[in-house]
Length: 134
Length: 147
Image 1: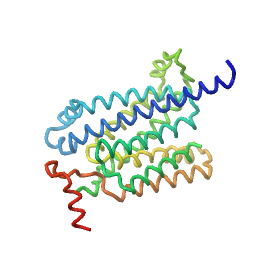
Image 2: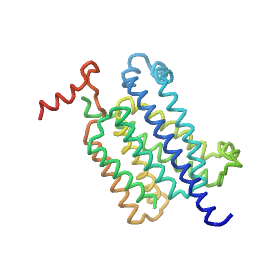
Image 3: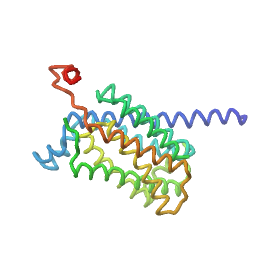
Image 4: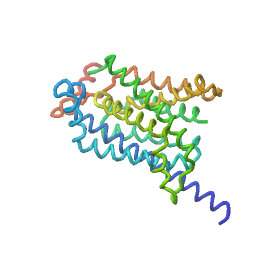
């Protein structure tokens, strides 16, 4: 295999892993957020039915469970991606894609009020993460 | 509308930032001892579960997950995102003041920018309240009156 082909294949491998990890994170976080939003304030539930009641409310929520599975898969995919790709590339790339995806998905699926303040925060976080990871 | 957080809710936010940053640092230290994992040697990932740094890192990340789940029950995802990004700041500051690494000007700038991002969002409401589902558009009507 020529060095160019090898480099291109490696690039696809690395960016495929980065995109996969970010997509799992967005799916997981949005499903968990949707589940927790439907359950309501856990402090109130704990006051009513105690800690076991609060834990039961969380663990019997379908979207929470699927979201948590996505996050568990994300954890192992992340270990895999970080051991293959350069940390200074993979960490900020995964974080940036996850932040953008989360903001878009939160607005679309969770109907969160993502105002210009929050969009600005997303942009600032991405720039900050890239600068810190250099 | 819920604009301000209680002190215990700020405590949860602090626990999120600290457990995630320390947990991630321990994981990366553990994985650097394990070495690269390629598709033909996925068994190494199982081997990683016996590394003490990775074990403590995983315990901290489970604690992070519990706190994060709790926070999502009273705050928006887009409110918590900048708050969790503070863990990059904590990791960088841990490196500077505990491990005595030198921080380049670009890292200091990154820290400043993330802190600004947290400031933008912290000034607004933590939770989007969806009005009565039987009366969609009530929120917009209210803001129209206010304007």
